Image: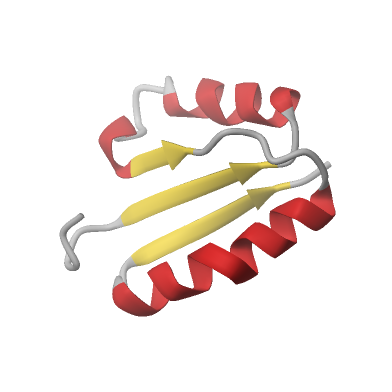
Length: 72
């Protein structure tokens, strides 16, 4: 990943949230190369823990990266 190019990680709670994120990526105005929908993690607490364990480090390394936690 290029440090100067916007990148978005989407962490879905469950399969339905993953499908929602995938549908969003299909919109014509969305550059699907800049969004990475991760596999569902199985609950809101696991989404939060995954963010803490993995994505805080990524956000520190890549200043233009973003994380979207999809929880319903």
